[in-house]
Image (tube, rainbow, N blue to C red; front, side, top):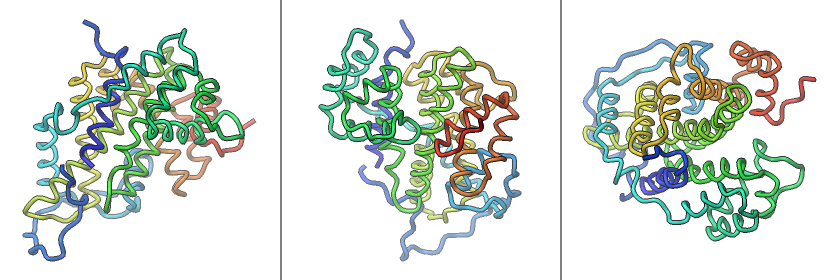
Amino acid sequence: MVILSAIAAAVIAGGIAWLWLRGREATPAPGMRSRDAAPVEAEAAVVIAPVAVGDLHRRFLLHALAVADDAPLRVQRAVVDDVDATLRRADLSSRYTPRRPNLLPQLIQSVNDTAASSRSIARIIGSDAVLAATLLRIANSPLYRLQRQDVQSIERAVTLIGNDGIRQIISAALVQPVMQAASGEDAAFARQLWDYTLVLSLAAADHARSMENEDGFAAQLAGLLLGLSAAMVMQATADVLARPPLRPREPGTLLEVLERCTVPTALRIADHWKLAPPVVQALRDVDASAPAGLARSLQVGRLAASAAMLHAGGRMPEEQGLAVLSTQLPPHVAAWLWRRVNPQAPDAD
């Protein structure tokens, strides 16, 4: 699992050279305890208030963890501190981010070459069966599908979607293994996190291009990096919970550690990879009260993805989702973005 996470994360780094600054072994199943383990010594936990109805991102995290909005939440501060310390001292060059596949530099070079034919790009993608299958699966998903019939060939996908679109799908396809690699109690969360990250990155990219006149791929990359970081945080939490003294898996603790560690971890990766300053700044400002540029797009993407996931899970009616987006965007833009992240939603016209 760690290896899958590492390879997927490293692949993204290798594939985005144009955005760079110029000049296990298997771990125990996350959160699982042996039935033969000795009783855990009681550890003081803080009970925090239920999540506010309007706090969409926290509500999504609880939804992904299969916890009700009004459930009492217990936070084990010692666990949170241990996970934070684990992530801060992790060697990103080996444990989480080792090598990058040799295919990526060649692939991204072709995608960025305006003279490259769709056939030549398709040939490179086709040399990796797993990547090709994942790319076609994403290209045929409701978020990216441009026609009724399935796209059954890589060359057709490249032709229909274009270089910019295919570059986004390549990035998402390479992230998918880490987003869905979890097992045990965290497997369902990993699936929800993948769907959320895909929607977040797409919405952020669309908003950056159409509303901020910013680089959509940079916004998408920042969104994907947040998803990767959340997956790493969950892995680190599973590692901590599996070490003596064994402690129970508390949803409130998971929520707290995700909120505390995801953005700092994303910033550590961005710094380690020497990503372009706008991407780093967007991550740094994603929680700001008045973000601008890419950070605003990232914030809008997170809002749209949270609302879409809650709606899909039956926890938010469409009218409320639209109303939430309308607090941040002009009504017609909110309606367009809602349809974009909810392809099954009827047109507002």
